[in-house]
Amino acid sequence: MALHENRVTLIRHGETEWSLSGQHTGITDIPLTENGRDQARRTGELIAGQSFALVLRSPLLRARETAELVGLADQATVDDDLLEWNYGDYEGITTAEIQKTHPGWTVWKGPIPNGETPDQVGDRVDRVIERAREVNGPVALVGHGHSLRILAARWCELPAVEGRRLQLSTATLSVLGWEHDVPGLVAWNAAEVRS
Image (cartoon, rainbow, N blue to C red; front, side, top):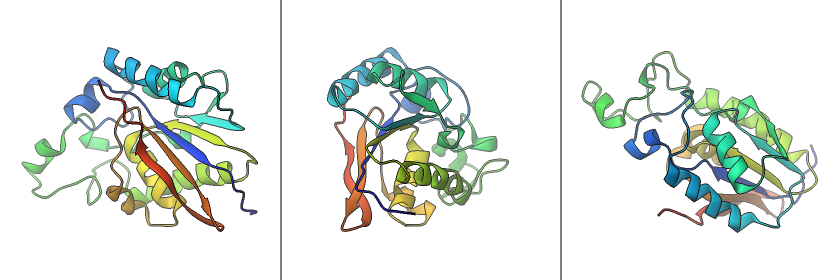
């Protein structure tokens, strides 16, 4: 696989009711809040005028709405590998609630009954990375907090679980790139656009 000097812009979806409350939102298909829509519009202003050789987005509503509001809907192709982490039995439940019965639990350490492991999410996003690296030119990916964190870790050739070190707010831009053929972070959790 040839290495390109292309950059990959990651766009996390705007705020939802569950991202606001801290509930694990994997495959539940919920819309953006009005604030989340405003966030996405402001994020769109930050990429206005940029062109992308490839735009991929998660199939979930919150990613679709974000892609539309940032101005990438016409270019975006749905990629199921950009789905958020499947939290299984912990879907819709906060970490604090889970820790009442499993002290010290985090999504990164698990277990996640009937859900995915970090490495399973890593396998999915590895396919997205491969697809992005095959493109000559800039790429944009519209997705979700945990899966984009794992994607960034894997881009940097780290284990999937190291995504735990990369906090990612709603409606932010992050950029992955290269320095001397070494993949790395160019910008992370940038342009935080909360109201």
